[in-house]
Image 1 (tube, rainbow, N blue to C red):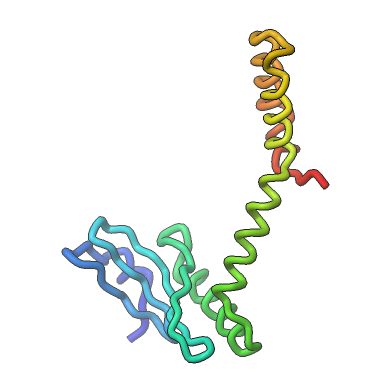
Image 2: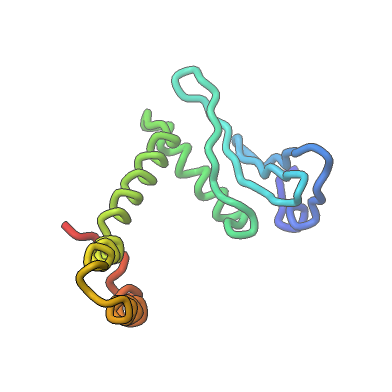
Length: 141
């Protein structure tokens, strides 16, 4: 019997975390606080590994299955999906560390002794309102 969205919604927390099995290594892990996490068990180079695919309901059953299929394609090509995910996360953090917003905030902080506090706060407020929503996440090369 395959896992359905209704069964997932009706899953109640228990004293210990338990699994609601889907197919091909995919399952929903229901914690004692009621949170539900998508997990994928797989083997790579003879070792058992687990890949986190998101939380329910942020990631629905259909999305979890598509992420599972993508991970299985990577495994078929000899690629560890866990390493791919870690590399993507590291690259994202590196991009965010060099974003316009981070560098602009550092610049404002460096001018703390040179500019009056009211002027610096006004500049910060203007950047937050008018610039950061559009350019804040842009990387600085």
